[in-house]
Length: 466
Image 1 (cartoon, rainbow, N blue to C red):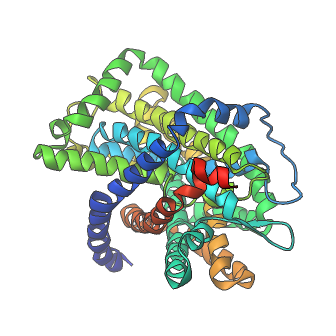
Image 2: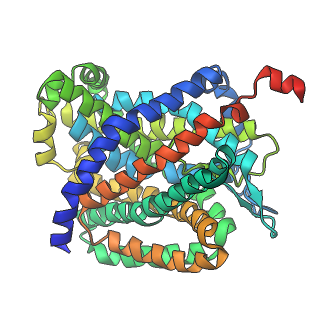
Image 3: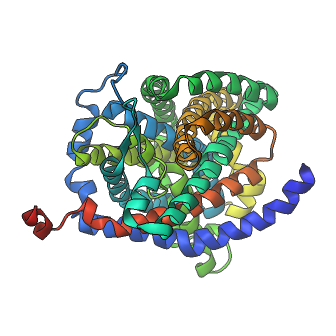
């Protein structure tokens, strides 16, 4: 196993380097900027509307739906996918490799991503299909084949389906279980394989319950887990209040002068900071990746716009609230004047601390090393556990698209195997594999988003003809 990992890692890392540096950044910012302009800044104009629709009638007991999910259950399922290791481990990795300035580029990606995810959710509702039992099937494969007819559309949809099954259903769930296993081992000394076995049992029970059981779990777990993490993070920031101005200062300074902390020339440093922000930003909020439309397609709404504005709030909560809070905790405790990584270059920092234990160390500055490790481990368990549930559903929808309903049980069994294997494999290779398939998913999804602009934002002339 070790020899295979050693051989695969440099190959996968090189593929990711080209995808994230030369394709991903341009596609993500391009489609986000395109929809920001075409929708006349929908993420600004309709932000209040989205907040009202999301929290105006908030309930943690949405109940069993006649079909699909309630709008909030669909959002909770989407946020369960978005708020995972990307917020804790992913943000930490971006800071380690790209410096504190990478967080600024995550914000930029997320701002434009709010317009992107509006388009994704709108298209997911407009192109979804209803099964005989009243459940919905929707997601990029359905709007890709709407955008591109014939063999080319089927190829792109098939490419996307395979990529998401590997990226989220298998490799992605390995990342989540890997992070849970490593943090629990650090905090409690529990062997990773035991954590993996427990995860398999719990996830297996929920998988068997289908969409309704998953919706019931996520609508309760997501708000509670977010609240616990936010309270813990605010406690740290209050304790480190005098360092908050310097923390924001470093984020903005190193966004435009990254060579001061990354090293090397300006060109190399800025490319690293931006690509880390884009790559980790994609993994965190998933806007443009094509994953969360599967959840939003389940929403019981009559107007696609309604779920589109709700979807925007998912990106906002993920990046501008949860991820930013974690980033502020890490930078204000570790990178400020009295921190262990003060004036420490990104390369040196990554040899001192790894992305898996950076957050634990940061919270430990205020809570104490042991309590900090335990707090992050518990939060990460809920974050990653809920992500596993959502990602398994997204993969399942695409497995059924490719192979029919009978394949769902085989997929579920394989998914449980990968969850267990994730606790046994090295962290770095699992992350690189997941990044690679995440990057590949973006390509067909972005092409369809560009092609279906008229379906998301109908022209005035089209409306008049109707």
